[in-house]
Length: 469
Image (cartoon, rainbow, N blue to C red):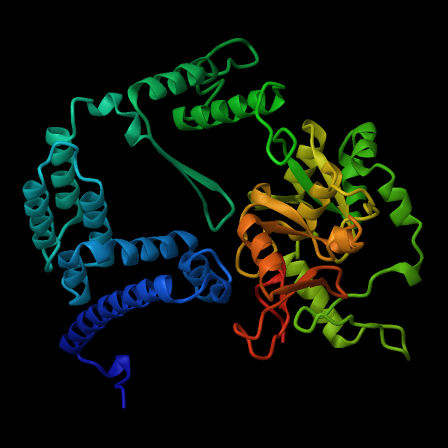
């Protein structure tokens, strides 16, 4: 029987924490070994993804970046048994192993093979034991690259350029970049005239009476201004058949609020004829709430005309988690506050898709062979991303799939379309996976018997998540 933590002495606490940490390292090594075999032995059809990283993300709590790192380690360690042995025995951490593996796979251009082996072994030694420090390993790698990396100085080496963009848990975007001198000069030159303090109303430029933004804030505002200018330009590449621009998804019940806060002509353009159609719908045409666990509609109680308790829970669920129907949903960044949504509707040129209470675009059926730009925006508003369960690749990287093929008489209508990335589009066409539009008007996926012997339908990626009992 495991002793309760509060019953442990100070020495036992320290010993147990160290022992558990070591066990975690061994389990991480075991997971890497398992993923290595999954990568080579399990078919992509059974995984349901082009590789183990997507499967790991969809079946565990791992983030995509963490899953990708595990797969990269699983593949790379096959070529470097000394690193593999160190991680298998728990001598070094996964992070240190990844750092050393990256060096081993892309060594400095002029470092001879014997030097590469010596450097790798020295790094493994430096990463072993309680004295291991990431900074020491990074410093050694930097010195080796500077000494043996070729004639290109670091400031001129464009091969080292990187830009990371990570969405945070609170809905913000964090950027981290590493650029060569020329690219850096371009960026600073573009920012410079836009980062000067704005004068106060009386024309003075004293920060306390005028622009009291910090330099970092001024650079961030300037960067946003550059993006505004780029998106307003006609000379930019297209993506998905149109030039990139902002899309805002709006529910019908919130459209009135936007009318009150935006120019009426702009809102009329946003709503098109869909608002009139939706407002004229009778109660009998409305879609009942749908149980997110079963996909079956929740009907009003026959005697008193009110919804049963589960419908009330469903309403509470929607209020909390949104289901993509609340004011403010950006395809890349996700939820947006009501106030900012209103500001966006007033100040920007944007495309708005009007949604019903179940998050489905209104009045957008078409019968042409190809999906129109407006239909694609409506599909993005409904599916958000690749709809395949657990995938979630950005909508800009997806294609519209005909559930009933066009060649078989399937129309190009909203109830016959679903957004899929290239891999899952091919998977649906060439495997026993099936997709259908459920009673909630959202896509549902049926796995083949090789994946799930019971073939239980799975909700689309955007609909998966916390469920009420």
